[in-house]
Length: 367
Image 1 (cartoon, rainbow, N blue to C red):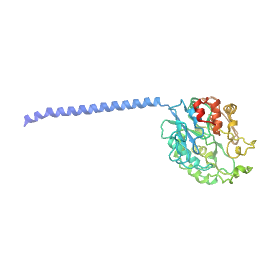
Image 2: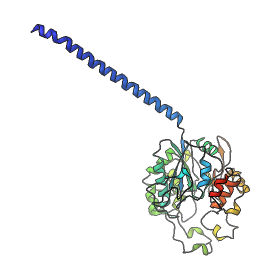
Image 3: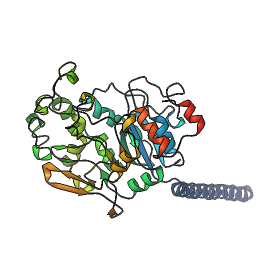
Image 4: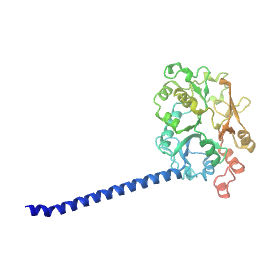
């Protein structure tokens, strides 16, 4: 018996040595793979720069798609695009000539009505999808009538040079806009107004998407009053606030950030220019509750230069003048402008805005 036991021991020790070698080899292999993956991730993070998500709110197709096509050229890997259009609308070769917009529509869009909470619902849908890309660090809302005023490189550097959001926000003191039924959830001292065309940091975009308090209050209590049919044919009332009460997209983001105590993290101005000085216009299409629409005859280099030269904004309700800065130095206030018709935008593209069309594009896009 003793001889048999002594013969079994070398085999047992050999088996243990093999097991230890296999385990050691597996540990070394796993450690090497982990280190390679970590190094690869660090390299990819260094290669992949933070991106700007351009979020378009459109009725159907994007009439100015080729203006944006020219803008995005050369900015690859620094931007992403999402479009909220009517439900079941597809961006394909039949509806856009720009490859940048192919299949960029969100698949859960809602029917949007002007002056209703569906507009801010569309904004939240766009942000939800844009946040799925971890490299998206800024979120820019644009309408289907917006044009860029500068090239992509300048626009990217301007937006990414600050850690703050750009949110046009000021105290709204007009009667009839704030609904007392919102209190105490939204106290009147947090009630704000401004342009819906905001630029948000990732932190503030997450605040909007995760909000489950302010948004329901807006759905229930922030509604415009009904307008008479064919209201454009009627003279404008002396007091417009009596015709419509609360336009949700003019209040939501501003009020939400005030409610969350985040106003110290925003630059309180918009980067999108709109012309609301319509008092001298006799054109009914240029008056009312919408900014002026620029037509072909309006689209001149002088107009663009006028908008570019604006370096401050005055807010009457707060007696505040906002001097525009970038990287700590005085700068232009606006990177985008609206509302431009298709002929107006293409006229600018063909002259001085983003460079001339080539001949093939000119034939594809007759005015």
